[in-house]
Image: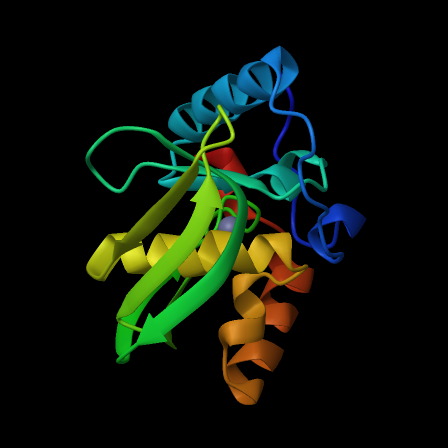
Length: 164
Ligand SMILES: [Zn+2]
């Protein structure tokens, strides 16, 4: 089983590239990602979080596992503050303001066009995972002062979520 990489790992800092082959390997990879996400446990996992810079993420906002391939055309509406964490920053949570509603076009495992959209947890997960594919982690969504404090905290304490 692949391991989740932590904040600071190079694959979390770069843009991912599109999936070109919708084959058995892709299905196997997303099955493994879903397993890793549930084991963690978490509500979303992007491929860069296991060191694979491909435009893939999986999520489960409460109604079963979903796979998003090559997501694009992000549409955002409204704004809401929500407590948010990340499997690559285990043990940390911050109140983060983002759009309340998000819609994202993508492809399913067979290469069919699909759309994921919603507010609350769904909207939040879509934005969070999409950021990972663009080399961003949730620290970039923090205000400057909070981000400074968070970086200091991480350098002093590491990732306490690993020990629980
Ligand atoms: Zn994350």
